Structures are given as C-alpha cells and as structure tokens.
Image (cartoon, rainbow, N blue to C red; front, side):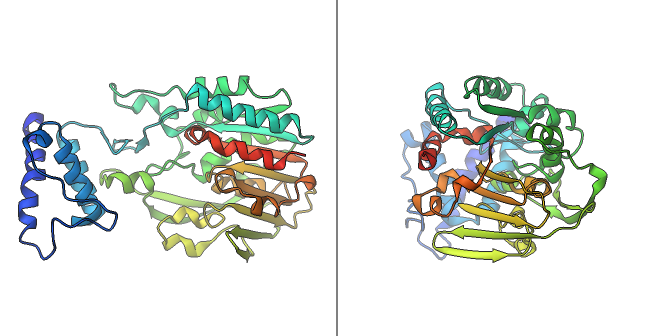
Amino acid sequence: MNPKKITVLAFLVLLIVPAVCFALPFDIGATSGSGVAWPKLSFKAVADKSYALGVESYFTQHFLERDQFLRLKTTLDVASGKKETNDVYLSESRLLQKVTLPTDESMRKSIESINRFASNSDKQIYFLLIPTAAEIYKETLPAYSPKADELAFINKTYSQLHSSITTLDAATPLTNSKEGEIFYRTDRRLTSYGAYSIYNYNIKSMGSVPAKLSDFSIEHLSGSFYGSLYKKTQYSLVKPDTIDLYHYAAKQYSSYVTIRNGTETTFHDNIYFRDRLTLSDPLSVFLGGTKPFINIQTDNQAKKNLLIFTDGNLGAMSQFLTIHYDDITIVDLSYLTEYYRDSIDFDRYDNVLFYYSTPSMLESDKFGKLSLFSK
C-alpha cells in the first residue's frame, strides 16, 4: 500500500476509534488514573497534530491496554515506512534505543565532581564508559537518523578525567565480539556474554588474570525474554532473547548478598534471584535488580575489595567480578543519601570502579553526591 495512504489510514483510525468509544461502558470524557484527559476536537488541534497526540496519550493510559495500543501504533508506523517509534529504532534483527548525549555544560559539572572525588581519595580508581548497541551496530541505523558519536564522547570524557583515574575500554571488546549476542535484541542492557567480553579485556588493567570462557558452565535460564525496548514498541518481528547465567566452574565459592532499599535490609545466599524471572523485569535475576545499595561477600579468599558506582546496568558483570573480589559494594548514586552513605565503610575499600553507560551520564546531579565520601 502507498505510504501516504497508510498515513491517512492511521490518522483516520485515531479519529474514528474515539467515536466507537461512546458505545463502551465508561466515560470517554473522564481523565485516566494518571490525569490524562480526552483532548478537545477542533480544526486547530487537528491541523497542528495536538489532537492526534492527545488521543494517543489518552489511549495509552486509559482506553486500550497499553501493549495493544503500542502494537497498533508500531504496526501503523512500520506500514507507513517509519523505522522508529517511541525513540526506538526498529529492525528484524534487533531494537536499538535512540541515544541522547549530555551537553558540554552538564558533563563539565559531572567531571568536576568526579575529579574532586579522585583528588581527595587515596583509592585506586577505574572508570568505564560503555557505548550502547546503537554505537556498536550503528551501520544498521536508518540512514536519516541522527547518530550520536558515542566513541568521541567517551574519548573526550576520558581526556578530562583526573590523572590518577585509570580509564577502561568497553568499545573495543564489544566491537570485536559484535557477531555474538553482546546486547539483548529487545533490551538496552548487556548480555552475560557482552559483560564477559568487557571483563576479559579489562580485568588485567585492574590487576587480575581473566578467567577463560571455558572456565564457565553456561546455563540457559530463559529463551523467551522480551526486554524494555520491546515493551516500548511491541514490535513482533524481533525474536525473543535468551538469558544466560555464567557459573564459574574452575573454583567453587559461595556468595552472600545484602541489599538495602529504604529502611528494609534483606540477606540472600546467591547473586542469582531466580524467582525474579517471572516478574516485570526478568533481568533482575541478577542481584535482584537495581537497588540503592548492594553488598556481595564471597569466601573465595581473594583478599581484594571493590566499591562500584553504577547506573543499574552492572547486573551480569557481577558474575565475573566476584571471582576476583571477596567484598564488593555496589552503589547507585541516583539514590544515594546520607542514610546509605552511613552503611558504607569507605576506608576499607582500596579500589573504586565507575561503571556507566553513555546515556546515563545525562544526569549530572548524581555525581555531586560523591562529596558525601570526601574526607
């Protein structure tokens, strides 16, 4: 069908379906639970597309099930020739998030906070910025799409860091391993194999010898995982993902996890939370998902410790770091308060790792919280 006709059809759907709603047993003029009201119809609203956008917002929150509406919207977008919807680029091989990088001013504030922390610290500090799948697979992006130069951003950031900070390289191992499943097809996060690729390339720079891939027993935990990018689009042509767990078979040791979330503290005897597989985010099988404070103690006799500041993307990497450290504390600076700071014996850590994806650097305010660790 002609793309212009498809576009007209899509617009008619947004106009006609509301009329059907009047026959349904709820008040179409009511606001949804989120406060989204039915848009007022006028020639001006139709002309400037605010009516159609208002209908979309209302449907998403109130009329249709969210997934059903997203599936309809994506189908119409694709039929009209679009390869992007809800800031996600579509292809049958994978879904890619649209990346926005921080402004120079935002990064200036972040780097100032990080460098101030480094200059006041006697710790060995490492910094790892991870490019997104949109950078690693940029050749698959639509020709018209704006392409954030994440590698240039990473290099510029590294060049401005304090001289005492050791920078690590995620782009090279991910590029070298891109024929494998290093990112989930339906989610923005790294797979276990992607995390291993980064670990294997960088752990020497952190003073340890990497475990060989053959040292791991790989468990295929699930083959039907649909991640956050799929949930934003409901794009049915992309295949589901497999969630793999990497069990270190060369040496047996136990891990004990303490999680602090608000005033609640819980204790667990494994880094894998298998009961989370059926929840809304199955990737919370790793460490129970994003939390303000997580501590991992192991009996591997490594006699090394590590404090990690991260953005919630660490997940799968924990499988490999526990081989080399017997005490790891993971802190999400976005949630850091003095309450959590008081839970951390900062002096006992010799090593600090900043572990972030490039888009997560957008939030500059969080790095200001590093001042809580100043002497």
